[in-house]
Structure formats: structure tokens, C-alpha cells
Length: 511
Image (cartoon, rainbow, N blue to C red):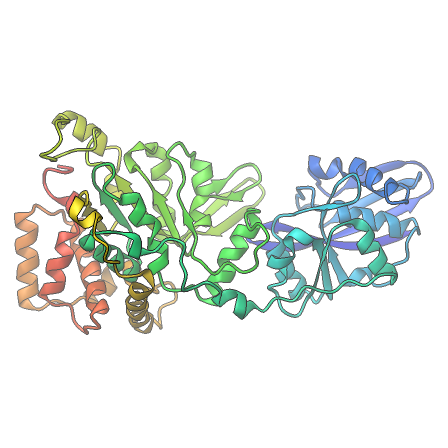
């Protein structure tokens, strides 16, 4: 008897429906075809034990299973449940007339219980697109898949529940999630809040500007000055995610198997990889490509602590994704693209000892040591960082103050207002949403300067020995400062403030 059961394969962040054809005939043997990987080939042992422990048998006949399209590589253990149900229906041990209306996915344990799978959300989106009635999957993944409206999503704990439902012996309630309620939950109660930060008013202002314009930022200061503390609080002042952004971000985390029983992600991600990370772990890849840290930080913040400690080649592979806001991984037979639109926040000590130019510290580094330390960061990478700011330690008087600082929610209101101005400005442009994404043509159009501002910028560039690449960066940041004040034009005060945020371009840092 020939039976067709439906599963799904995930490539990049999109799913493809897989038709599992099970044919049971006279003879003996078990043949699995259609480019399955080792995890799928081993499934026959898991399926045989799970069926026996639930009162069914693996038929002692010739079982041929084809996973179509046959030229597409299938991987992972998520097809166990699909294959097991196909074998039971094909061998007439159960009767399931409506089996072709459902997508069935799940990894089987030997007792028939189900283990979680990866990519449940993209699979559910594809199932709805192709007109399937429902989706059976492990209960651990049910919340992420239930985000998709118009599809009955059934979370099951073991194979018997699926069998009973298909035979009409038992009932299962589809999981329903109010996406909007889930989306707006806990938005005003960030885990890390700027009200915890004592002093550092100039750095907070800098963070606000970076958040408002989507600018990449680097914090330079001695150990214990609060660089990491400030960076961790940056997501709390970014504008709330739109529903489209939340869905994109949730899809990536679903594919990577990192959702851990949550539905829609409503908080912007914050990723902080260790400096020993490899190229593949940072940008994604591997023999079976998986999203890397830069894609996990999509629509959020990627924090690189102690930037010069990262291997130079690891930092260099990040240059193109920073520009294109996506990363493409090519293999001989296929290519996958992961989105990677993130804000880069980096921190570093100003010298190997960490106390460069600190009058209170006896530790000093020679100019040669300084140069070697700072040369680990290439000019092209620094070119993609708009704001450089020096962080100084907080004095005791500030630390011991009882007064609470401004909260993240209040700062976020100003940031959101500035982003809305930018959204209106770039509404006709497909790939530009905020100031950091402007190119030279847009800078000329939206950052036109009067004579006073031009003269100020010219004097600053000559006196401070600012590089040519600093020119565009200063104008972009000045445009964001103007947007925070809801000013239609960039004026000299905006330029003056933006000039302060180019520490590493000054002569004596990377000269």
C-alpha cells in the first residue's frame, strides 16, 4: 500500500514542504531514499522501538520510503514522527483518511515521546501558505508555531496522541495565541535599565544618539569604567520592534533552535560573543549552514567586548554584512541568505594595560605596544563605526548619590520620535530606514550645511587632524542630533557635538 505523509525542510529562514511516500510490499528490507542524512537513516531504530513500546509493530515486509523532492538534502531527526505515521498507515495498523491535510514533524524517543525540533515557525508559515489544515509538532515548540493565524497547531507529547486524533478516538485542542497581546507584553519593563547607571551623562547622550540613528558605536575606556554595563542597556532604549521585525527575528531564533518555549519575540536581541569565536560561529555557515551571531542579533545589538582581542580575520568577515545587512553562505549545491541588520556596539581598553593617558595609574604602555594593540582593528572596519566615545571612570560622589537617573522608557520615547522623523524622510526608499544607512547622495541632500557650519567643520578637521572618512560620519551623526531636536536643518551646534564623537580619528590614536 502506498501512503503520502507531509513534513518540511528548512533552508536559511524559509521552509520547503517534503512529501514522504511510504510503500509497503511483499519481501523484506528497509529502503530510505531521497538524500537523507545519517540522523534520518538511523531513524528506523528509534521508530521500531517507539512503535513496539506503544503496542504496534514494524512490519516485516519490504518498506520503501522516498522523501521528495529527491534531489534536496534532508537533515536532522525531526522526520521520525512523519516516517512512523506513514509506516503505520501504510501497513494498515491505523486508519487515517485525512492524513494529507496535515504537516507532521517531531523527533521520537524510544518510548514514543517527542523531543523538540528546529524551525517550527518557518514550517508553520509555509504550511499555511500551501493550504494545510493543521500541523502536529512537539509541545515544546507549539508556542512559536501558534503565532501563525489560520492554521490549527497541535502540540503533542507522544506518538499515541497523534494516532488517536487521526483515528478519531481522541481530541486535541489547537493552541491559540493572541499575537498582539504577546507582542506588547513587558515592553515597558526592560531587564536592564538606564536608571541603574550613575553619572556618565555624556555617554548616555551618546547612546541615545546611536539608538536614534542606528549608528554603530565604539566605547573606549579603562577597565571598570562601565562600558559593558552601558552596552547591555542599549536595547532598552531602541524603538519597539514592529510586528514584521518581531516575526523576522523569531524566525531566525526558531531555525537556530534557541526559542525555549516562547512565542513571538518582542524584545530586541542582545548578543555578546566571546573573543575566541570563530568566523563560522560569527557570520554563520558550517557543512549544514546555521545562522551565526550576526544573524541572531538581527534587529538588535551585537556587542563585541574588548574588540582588539578578537582575531583580525574574524572581524574582517563582518565588514560586508555590516554594509549589506545580510550574509550569503554559498555551498556547491545551494546558497542560503540570512538577514543581519544589527547595531554594532564595541568596547576596548585604550592600551594593553588599559590605562592609557590616566594620570592616576602608574601602568603605562610604550608607543610601540600601543600601535601594535590598536592596529588589530583595521581602518575599513573602523570606517563602518560612526561614533567613537571615551568612557571615564565614575567618581565616588556620583556612585554614592541616591538620586535615580532617567529611565530607559523616557529615553526611548525621544529615540522613537526621532526614528519616526527618519521613517517619513526615507519612506520612498526601499533599503533605507534610518540615518546610519544613508549613502553619499543622501548625505548631500539631507545634511546641507550653512556657511558657519561648513567653516566649523573645516577648522575641526584641520585642527584635530580628522581623516577624510570622518567627514561623512560627522554629517550623519549631526543629522541624527538634529532629528532628536526635531530640527529641519543641521546647524553648527549639531556639527560641534558630532565632532566630539570621533576620538579614534584624532592624531595620536591611530596615527
